[in-house]
Length: 44
Length: 107
Image (cartoon, rainbow over all chains, first blue to last red; front, side, top):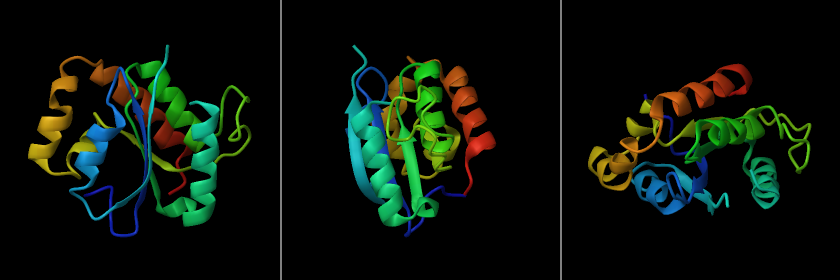
């Protein structure tokens, strides 16, 4: 079952050393969900 | 999770309704991923940011989790995230994030 539906508002908290925000954005664009925030944190 | 991102999470949950929010995290380490998951569910465990004492109980998944993988296009997932599955400690990350979700997510 999908974790996203047409009402889903997605917040992306990426990590420069892990999965960056834009990579997750591309994936979520293939779902009915709306991305409302995307950031990539940097732990240095 | 940094304080600015905590503030945005809190604002957006108020604007759109916590039940509609899905937080997707990409932390490289199991510990940092677990802390981020805890912050958006139970509240900021460091008591430093806007989510201190604010248990939003949001749905939260890490991008390496099966639930996320199965919810998006398989080819795009492979292109964008596939490579990192070989680098990250996937099992540890999944275990930390799932534990927080199972305990604190309200939706």
